[in-house]
Image (cartoon, rainbow, N blue to C red; front, side, top):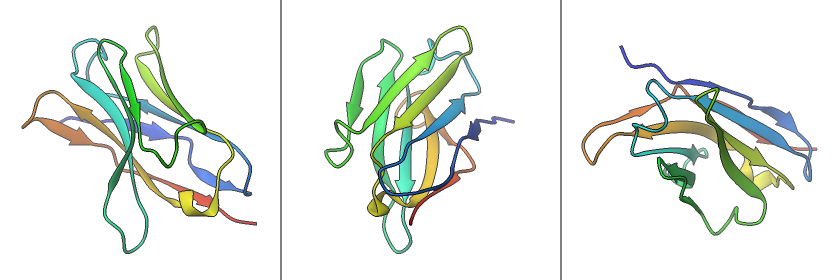
Length: 116
């Protein structure tokens, strides 16, 4: 059974920071990409940031300059550092590991709430 392990969500005030962690089921060097998506109530799930096995990263325009995706090769873990959080960042954040166009697995999701 494929299982991604996510952690790091919580409640934070506007302007605060959180770091999400995702330990994928396989080696980050074998998986095509590992990324973070989010889904707010009443909205579609959207890409936040992802990183390929080669280390190429991409971001949604709404989070550029505030969020950073990175990885720790030794720990086989991908991180999403979120700074200057805004209320509109409130959502359930999901980690996705994609092996190819048809093979991908979602994590269970972690809630991020930005509120004063």
